[in-house]
Amino acid sequence: MWDDNEEGGHWQFQFRRNLRDWEIPMIDALTDRIGDFSFSENEDSWLWVWSKKGSFTVRSMYKFLTDEKFDRLGSRQVFPSSLVWGTDFPMNIKCFFWSLFLGKILTRPNLVHKGFDISSLCPFCNLLPESTVHLFLHCLLMLESWTDLLSSNQQTLLKVYEADTVVLELWTDLLSSNQQTLLKVYEADTVVDLFSNWPVKSGNDLMVRVWKYLPYAAAWVTWKHRNNKVFNKALA
Image (tube, rainbow, N blue to C red; front, side):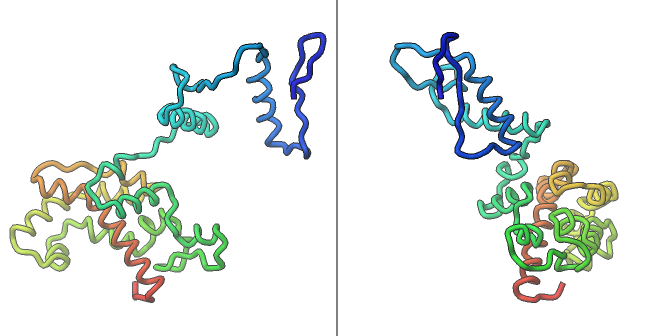
C-alpha cells in the first residue's frame, strides 16, 4: 500500500472490486488522515488517539462514536435516558420504553420491514399504518382513551374509578383543567415529545407520583391490550 519513490513515497490503494459511490468519500477521508504519516525505525506501539493518555477507555470510545454520529446526522439528538433509566419501573418495563422511544418495538410496519408478510394497518382502527405515534397517541381509539383519561368531569371519574370520597378528591385535583395536556397529545410528533413535555404537577406526593407515571401506565396498558387483540383476538 505504501509506494516509495524519490519524493518520499505515497499511499497507493488496490481494491479487489470497484468502489461504490458512497465509499469514495470515505477513502478520501482516510487518505487525508494518513497522508502526513512518515515511517521510522522506532519500535511500533499501540496508541489510542481518542483519549489524552493514549489508553483505551469505554468512555472515550462512546464519545467518539456519538460525536461521529452527530456529525453525520448534522444535529445532536440525545436520547432522553432519564425518561427510561431514571424511573422506578421493573427492568422489563424500562426495556419496553427504551425500545418504544427508539421506535424499535415490534409494531406491524417494523415487522413488515423485517420481512413479515402481514398487514401494516393498526389492529384497533384498521385505517392507518401502526406507527408508534399512531398506536399510542393518534389512533381514534387512543384519542378517545386520552380524552376520557384527562377528563375533569366528576361523573366520568365516578364511573371509571368507582372511588370513595378521598380517592375521588385526589383524582379530581389530579385531572382537573387538563385541556392543555390533551392538546399536547394531539400536537405531539413522537411519543418522546409527549413524555418529554408532560406537565409537572405539585401538591400531594401521591398525586404528583401518579400524574408523573400516568402516560407510562397508558402506554403500557395500550401495548398489552394491543397484543391481546392481535394474538388472542380480544375485542378492542
